Image 1 (tube, rainbow, N blue to C red):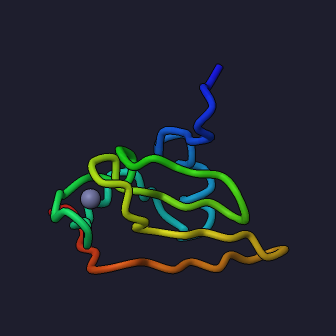
Image 2: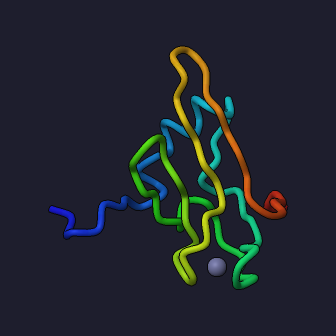
Image 3: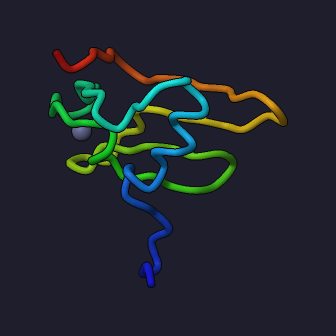
Length: 85
Ligand SMILES: [Zn+2]
């Protein structure tokens, strides 16, 4: 069972992300706008609340927010994102 912090491994959201983006996303890397660390989305921490916020595991900066709106998704990135080669 998770502890008091309500977060999941980003990989736990692989299905949601694939549905929102139409492709596998956990291997996509992004550079954190807070600390500069480059991590795959699967390594991010997913905080559940009003939607899902993926936060940098190093500094906690929000990198991606996904909100389900009925049959579609609202997706907002924070900072630059680039794809792994
Ligand atoms: Zn960071």
